[in-house]
Length: 66
Image 1: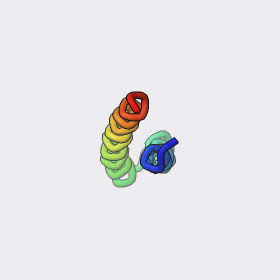
Image 2 (image 1 turned 135 degrees about the vertical axis):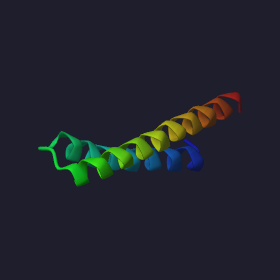
Image 3 (image 1 turned 45 degrees about the horizontal axis):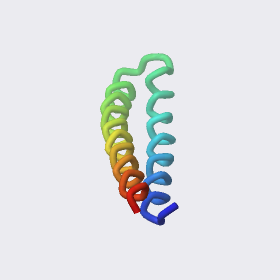
Image 4 (image 1 turned 180 degrees about the vertical axis):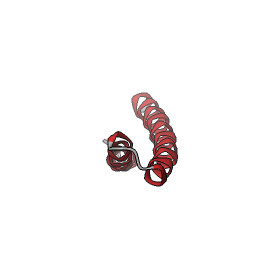
């Protein structure tokens, strides 16, 4: 596995951990301030996870051609 692909996968794993932390706040008993911030951060982190997924797919495609 290339160093670039490994780095992307580690970044994705880290962002999944962060997303899970925000999901736990959203699943907890409702606290308006915490929920609003967690919801915003969850959406932001999810967009980043999806971008990392696309980057990983692209890197896999490049690696498969080599």
